[in-house]
Length: 107
Image (cartoon, rainbow, N blue to C red):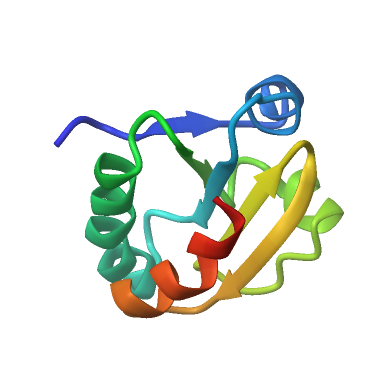
């Protein structure tokens, strides 16, 4: 599986908010154990939804302004953006089936 694209405060507007397709953003950190558990699920979703949904990661420690802007108090947090708007927000570790169930209606 290919490495995931990371976004940051400089390219978030262009890569996420202005994207023509839905974008799933994984707010994560290298030290976060639940994030590590969620990582293979997010990568599988990226592969399954290739061409339909853009899936990116955002390092929480390196992007504190985005964490504050979107009210992310805990990680992992997944947000699905569509046309610049948050359509779904999921906090904490979730199984693949739960994620698919919550995200699919917006895709």
